[in-house]
Length: 129
Image (cartoon, rainbow, N blue to C red; front, side, top):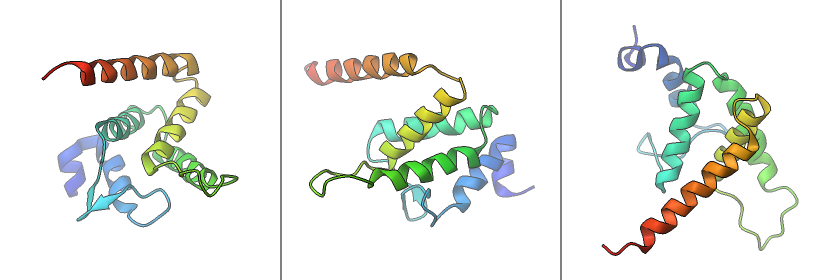
């Protein structure tokens, strides 16, 4: 039994796949070998992808292939003055497309959840501290 299996049990496979992908186009941003998340939503969407995969709703390689395609297409046909989407924006787009295509979640449900999250975030910024 290796380190990841002891820590994560059956989920150890996913942890190993993510940990081993350190230099490919789908490799998550890292600092000192650890994943780096600049915003709270980035870690949440990463955790959601791992959880859905662990539940058997899709294979990690299936998601990884979509992520690579999303990253590759991100710069295609853009004006030089337009900022490219971040890694996690591509990650989120790939995950959204995958769950919609597989019938895990409807596009309208995703839009509803995003709008609710944005409204909640906006309300939190307006509250006095």
